Length: 354
Image (cartoon, rainbow, N blue to C red):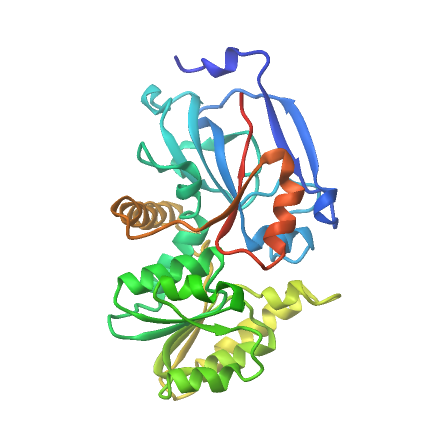
């Protein structure tokens, strides 16, 4: 029946609230009564939600376009449909789905528009599927839609041990691409096992070390750090190569740094380099591009790309890298671990739902 879950009077939503500029311990656990899904909505019981770098920036008030405090973070999620509103097929109840939310995912239950749902096949671990939403789609689109990497080419992935970086490396290796990845030495053995050639991201001679591995330059650089170091990333490119910036992590580490000023400066630099007659290009990747002006096309692209990733997961090509799983109420410890820069893969929140 449509509203079977709604009849359980003891059921309530647990959510994690970011009240302001606080340390991870300042996050609040809030509970409130459940609302019924409106027309066109579904109620999803969340089974996994990830901690990405976006939430880490939001905690510091340094994520471009984040809402005013307080709000519930959570960029993506996987869960099971428990109730549907008017105009939504009853057959969706009991189906596992994923969603890209940007905020609101750190909850036990959530109401979502049915159009935003991404299907997740039965038998897949919700945490495994979660790694493929914002991290996986970002990696897939940058590699195949933007850079259009070809077999035999060489790329550099900054933070190859991270949520996006670990999937980028796997996708590129599957496509026959040589991958050079930066990471802390503690992760180098794991990277080698996955076919990635590791370099120490703290190496003061990183550019020289890279030049030894790729004297003629590389075909693409995937840079989530931004800041002043982005020029070095551009210089790594071979003629015809592409620099893909998909973050500005350096700002989050600088006290008093202006998010808007730093972001605009980064965009200006990329635009200027695109005017140079050297055959190289520089792009700032945004997973939300086209969301406001072409929502149908945007959603179709998400479904297609997520479907490609799920297929590779089922085939065993992609091996989700999950650093740790935490109950939703232990979000402070989870966020501290995610921010420690010591993990390989992604930290996942798993709501405790009875």
